[in-house]
Length: 500
Ligand SMILES: Cc1cc2nc3c(=O)[nH]c(=O)nc-3n(C[C@H](O)[C@H](O)[C@H](O)COP(=O)(O)OP(=O)(O)OC[C@H]3O[C@@H](n4cnc5c(N)ncnc54)[C@H](O)[C@@H]3O)c2cc1C
Image (cartoon, rainbow, N blue to C red; front, side, top):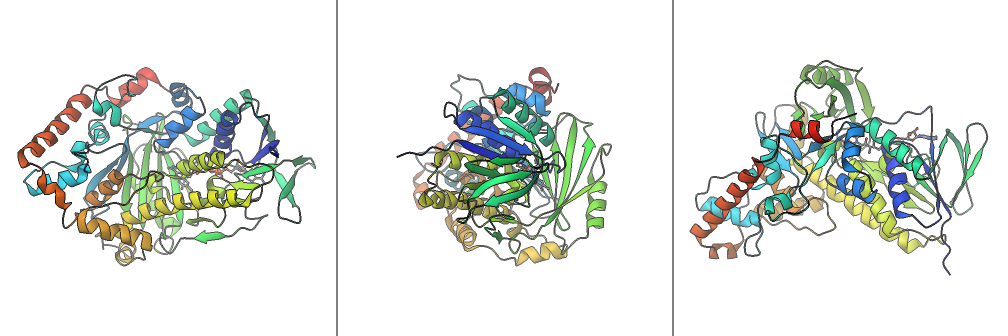
């Protein structure tokens, strides 16, 4: 007999709390499950989290939000990928684009065909085959038309740079219109039963809120999942030693570019995220190698434009909860874990957690197998992203500071070591459809870090040299021809989705 849930209570009104309420209000339409969000008037949201990946577009669509209205309300710009400066060595720069790179040829990965063409004397760059990279280089953007025959238009992908505070405000309004109950109060006490199921929350002022299920979106502390249920934390600081960030906003004084810039620095890296009305800046650093004072100075010396606020220091511990879902509690956002924002994946993990949760949506019997399989899936997502981030550090050739010298011999998880070994031998990437980073993404980082395989796939030798060269030239030409007809990114925003 099915025993459906009757109520879900989301605790926390930051990006993750309101994303949960927005997506669930769409997914649970017609179910009669009551959704409530409790947010504290006294505990601030983190207020960062402004660079996203293409799954944010899927989130907007899944919530039936009008994309242009969302961009106007959140002062958003479009993002085509990330420019990585000074990572392999000081002075180096490469681009990690979203979307595909090249068209597969005769069933072989494009990367393999490109490697053969290099051996044949081709001198093109990897990025020449990426619609996103060419768009970024030329600061072009337009939303893909609904109907077209052109493979370039069908294969670029985009995300957004967003104002985090405005995102929460926009989603809050949307949810309230959709019937989500909002309670403005601080949770003071959490009651659990003898089986460690949460029963109710006591709010400041004495009111009690009961619910069948709880989603913990209370930020790093994890009020329900950790402070109450004590599931434990898997600390990954030994792999990724950056543990603090300093953030700063500056006035936007040039046209915003359609990409994030991540620059390797003395003891970590800094970001630049262009919004319509300002730029978000930050320096992620390791406290073993840099003091807060030095980090603030470094950031201030490297921003452009008028500084709009006081620098803010944010400490964090890289890792994730040992159980992201436990009994009648799901943890979400910073409450379920954190990986440094080098590839802008935290909001993506919020969305992915919710997608898994909806797939494994519980009955009131809270089947343990269901919970276990959910936890395996989200753990795999975390580990994949962790490995991808480590790749940026462990392949660097920099040895100019203690931090970068440490990276030369840093520990690497076996899952990543195997991936690097396989790639170095013949450019193979093991990848499955559940994973977020495509083979093209892995190749983009390897190529950017100047790591090329010893050999390519043996059957590629069967490709005719001249016809391969012609195919690749056509590829490059069709991308350039299509991209150069697109409008300028800034002009496109001004015309279609200028902030209100
Ligand atoms: C330095 C840094 C840079 C980042 N950059 C990116 C990025 O570029 N891209 C990206 O995708 N992500 C990024 N992130 C992550 C992103 O900021 C978060 O994933 C996102 O903001 C979600 O935060 P949250 O809602 O989980 O937590 P928070 O914003 O901390 O919200 C917590 C909420 O819980 C409420 N609360 C807490 N305690 C109680 C209580 N007792 N009672 C009631 N309410 C309570 C608070 O009032 C608040 O509303 C970054 C994070 C950091 C630290």
